[in-house]
Image (tube, rainbow, N blue to C red):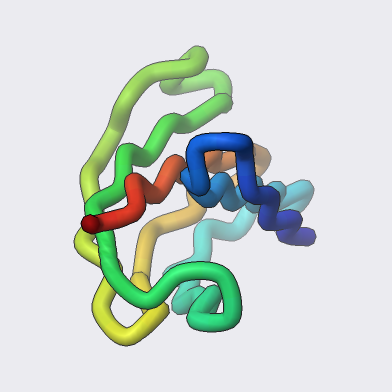
Length: 81
């Protein structure tokens, strides 16, 4: 499951939840909301309790990230000016 939101400062947030034990590599396309920017990746799991685990660069509205088993990932994309 994934949900994307936009805040008052035009930052885009993507929440992805994995309720399975298997880990996945996820490619997201949020080009309708944002085309480029840097992102901070936070993980919620038994291993990482709301910790920054990675950073991403959005290119053409696409980014790829790891989604651990039984976890949630929150990505905050900062809009480039």
